[in-house]
Length: 419
Image (cartoon, rainbow, N blue to C red):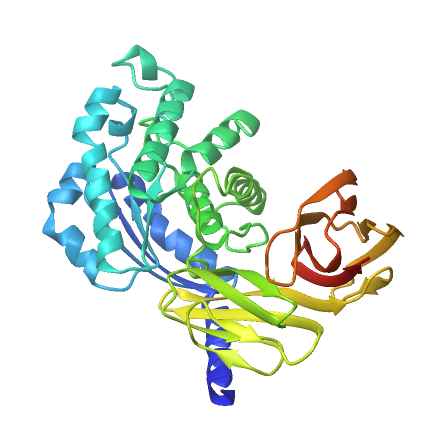
């Protein structure tokens, strides 16, 4: 067992180190190509201590269908175990009427994203939310201003992500923030569509925040811009992304692995049963907090004596590892206070022969109260008063009873003798 835990410790260290790196493939067109935006992203990341491997597949004016029909797109996807594959549509197509987008863009966006997921389990598809043209697109009233076009692009890219379990890098949102708050910064070339260096730098900053879930502020790589302008763009990207991580459905590439578990305790036999729930996990180890461990699924464990035990579940797999813990407390007490190792304090007071008050402190919330008899049957009780941290109950059941309740991550199982 010692060797298994040592291996897990090494894996944990490697995963922590891996959080400072990412591999990203950009698939798009001239909006991605201009000013070598992927290169700007890589240089920006390097300046902030992140090791990135970047590649791109760009074709002028390419639509989602173009890339979906091009074998080179899939060759690029297969060329490495990418953490992210960024997908960008032709600048106008997501802003067109819904029926047109539904038939001419959405199916191919989903096809590409599905291919990303199927080629490598740990690879995520991320859509490049582009920006509205400087004066909108005059061919249709619904997109004939920047704001109208930008809003339709925003909604369309979110729809692509919803339809394919993918995420969005909200470059268009950052673009709007700069236009609204710093109009002196020129983002467009003379055609009112393609990005100037400032626009591409803004996109790179937004991808940095989207991929690493950190602000690009503090980078000394300015992409050829003056420091003042670059710092404004760094801040705009942080605002667009970090306040709305869930809106953009962003997941850090080292957070795909996930473990959690529920526990059921029986203080009469000093045993606990566990049920795990995992994602992207191949193997796991249980540490029951008393020196014993298990690699089994949904185990049951018997403890040798009353006390407090911190149970830890460590899961690991190809997309990273994750750890979660829960404190179990087996006590035989009544009418006294108790403080566990997590500084969660409870006190059980016997008000009279069959009335009890349970109170918790340290801003903890008391929840999940159940009462059982010695054979595990639930005992009815009457709630006389309650709030988040205090409950007063009356028991009709005589004899030995078990009070089960939770505070935060601690689960208590308290034996009382109701006379």
